Length: 131
Image 1 (tube, helix red, strand yellow):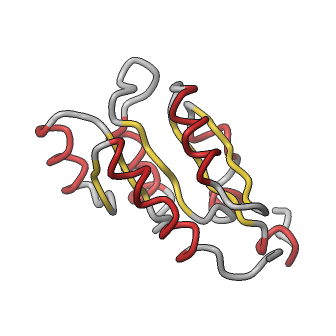
Image 2 (cartoon, rainbow, N blue to C red):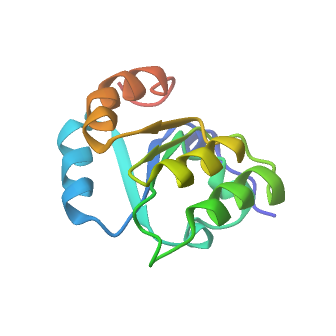
């Protein structure tokens, strides 16, 4: 297994699991300098579990049920990999949100509420790395 370097650990990176290009643009608009965003539709695209650990948080689109199963994503993170990466979800109906809550998603928000929360998330998870 490759060991991550100090520089890799200090990089400010987040994941957006969505095909929604407008949401990606909205997140990037609010993203401070020095942050990197990776948009994917498969958790495996991020690499092995030790590579997933290098991300600060994950934004999960609950309306993307045609691209991936959000419940499978959270279960793979929490149960299979036992990773406690913060997961902030948006969209979805009440039933899916309830299931995501039980599967240990951190926050479930409407799209606009998540976009409003982003500056606080960048501040909270911005420890280390370039200023």
